[in-house]
Structure formats: structure tokens, C-alpha cells
Image 1 (tube, rainbow, N blue to C red):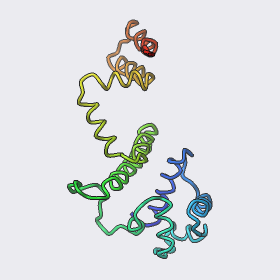
Image 2 (image 1 turned 180 degrees about the horizontal axis):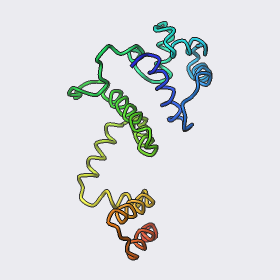
Image 3 (image 1 turned 45 degrees about the vertical axis):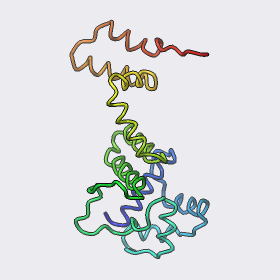
Image 4 (image 1 turned 120 degrees about the horizontal axis):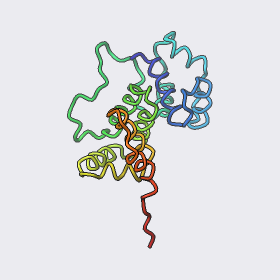
Length: 194
């Protein structure tokens, strides 16, 4: 990936992280950098970097962008020919495991950008301070029999209803009992107050 592509990609991710539903534009980026880091960067300079007209940037600009986007400054260079960003080695004991995991999750969010819900979930996970622990918790949930459906029923009742409807459509029939159960699932939950 070229430097310009990385900056465009980071602008898109930053827009998603800020809840904008779109990439932040270059002018917004310049204003945010100045407001949040005190760094100075012109929109025309940024445009030249993204277009490839300026293939390299100053160390100050690299540090400013890395600080703003919360990436390692070494990320802000062209990737060498044949480079693959996937995690390929045993990560245990590496001090910046969380940062590498977060970059991997952000890359995954980009790959699944057509699925807005999945993209948002991956970005939310990447934003969390303990993304590794979140994934380990997910593993525990999946390995505990019956826990996932119960959690979905409580936390995302609409997802349970949608899953039931999809399953029924696949089977070619939709029984009245199953439709009633799916609609009433949220109503059956009881909250115990002490």
C-alpha cells in the first residue's frame, strides 16, 4: 500500500470512529490536527502526499499524523514490494500486541466495509483499550454452551428475531408459533430487582 492510500484509509477509519459515517475530508483533518495536537499541516501539502506528487514527507509531518491517527510513525511510508499486512508470527511476548491487534482489526473492518454492522463492531473492538481481552472473552462466550443465544436475546433482541426469520425463510416455512416466540422473546425477559 502506498503512503497516499494509507492516509486516505486512515481518514476513512477516523471518520467512522468519530461516528460520521464517512471519511473525514482533508480540510477537516487539517483543522482536527491543529485543534487536537497543535500541529500545523496545510491541506495542499496533504493533497500532494495523498496524490503521490510528494512521495515522502518530513519527519515532523510523519510524527504529527502518527500522533493524530494513533499509529506507529513507521506505518506512514510506502510498503515494500510483496509486503503482506496480515499477522504471520507468534505474537506472545511482543510489547505492542494491542497495537498490532488493533491495526489488524481496523484492516478487517476495511475489508468488510460493505457490511456496516460488522465494520462498526470491528472498529468498536479496535477502539477498546483491551481488545485482546475482549476477543478472549468472546472465545469464552462461544465455548460456554447456550450462553451466546441467551446473551443475544438480552442484548440484541432484534438480532434474535432476524435470525429466526432468516432461518425460517431458508426452511421454506414459517410457523405461527415460531413467529410469536420471536416477537415475544424480549417481553419474556424478567428483570429481578432487589
